[in-house]
Amino acid sequence: MRPRDRQYTATHEWAKSEADLVTVGITDFAVERLGDLTFLKLLKPSTTIGCDEPFGEIESVKAVAELYAPVAGTIVEVNEAAPDALDLVAQDPFEAGWLVRIRPSSPQRSAKLLSAEEYEKTLESA
Amino acid sequence: MVEFAGWRMPVQYGPILEEVRVVRERAGLFDLCHMGRIRAEGENSLEDLDRLVTNEVRTLPAGRARYALLCKESGGVLDDLIVYRSAGARDPFVVVNASNLSRDLAWMRERAPGTRFVDLTDEVAMLAVQGPEAQSILDPLTDLDLAALRYFGCAHGRLLGLEGVLFARTGYTGEDGFEVFPPAREAERVWEEILRSGNAKGLRPIGLGARDTLRLEAGLPLYGHEIDESTNPLEAGLGFAVRFAPGREFVGRAALEAVASGGPERRVVGFRTPSKRIPRQGYPVLEGGTPVGRVCSGGLSPTVGSTIGTAIVPASLADPGTSLEVDVRGERHPIEVVPLPFFHRRRSSA
Image 1 (cartoon, each protein chain N blue to C red):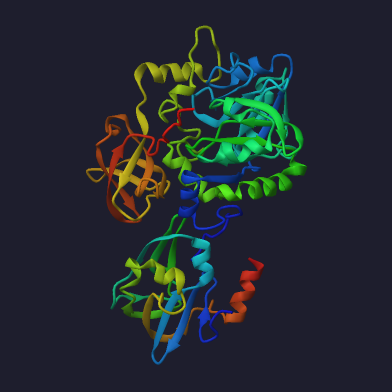
Image 2 (spheres, each protein chain N blue to C red):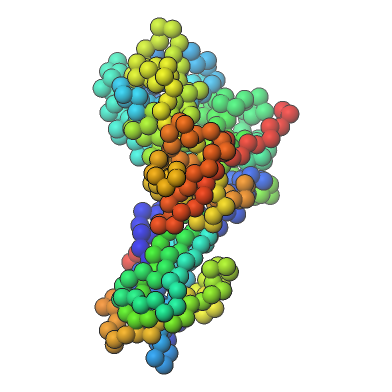
């Protein structure tokens, strides 16, 4: 069971709204598919970002993947510990392994946001 | 994130880096059923194969296997393969890359109409046991004297009650080990029983992800990375598998002789980088900011303890110690040319 308190993308990010910020990370499924993580790069705080645009890159032994923002806005905080402690992301992707916090610039959300149930359905058919 | 597509089991059974360590320290079992398997039937099949590939296989003694390349007239590589000549079989057996199987078959049939190239990929399975414990794991499962089978030796013998199974002391990991070819209908049972029997010696199933790291550490080429139609074997450092014996004709000989006499203009080299970012296939290699080559393969090597890779660069920049750069998605990282292979196993005294 994945956390029900947030939304998901088909590209395996999650987005959790708290007050006026949206916290973003990747899912356990993404972590499992990537395998051994080797590198994480995140955009710097105060960077403005569009919806569905990359806010960073994550690499593993076998692949490199872009991380896509589920909302448009300004990055107000990044998980500074994560790039040097990739185990945080690998072992606790939904909490300690969060990646960025975005202050949305508009109420617009990615059209692709899914509920936990919908996201899990996409995984079953994957 | 996207581009998860195209990964099918068995890329990994556990963490890839741990799987690499298992093979280097104990042993791994590989499912290689995707590889193409061909029997070359006919009176002159060995001579016909000899005219198709770069290495001399017509002189292959019974009980030996040989690595060779299938080249075009231009010298570009269509595939790399191993020809097995076991005393227990009339016809030579050839293992090619999965992705090239149908093209190889068409190429062979067109150029050697006197030989029947029979596709056995669906009938004969292919498993490998690789690592320092490989022999001790297989010994109790066969009547063959595995200790007497030398590197690149092959023989037919009994495996788990199955008669006439081809064994070869070959592999793609840089470790000692064997490849075995039981009937496909028995493959699942053979897999399970080898795994069960080898469990106490540390045998684990190993996926294609670790296999790629193992072969890269061992400096072994992967078709589509270090070699392809635009690369010749001499550039790729595979001159040992190209034999210009007097009077021997093979497809690509003239072009390859010309390359050999002038020396290759480009070379596939090994490199190391202190960067944690893995340079991947196609990333540009730069010298003084100018693109001069491209990455063939890259990976994180637990054995070497750093990021490693191969690249194709001008011959003038191929000497070990040469400092170059690689463009990793817009970031420049230093790389240093190093000798291949990255890993060389200590041979036992046997």
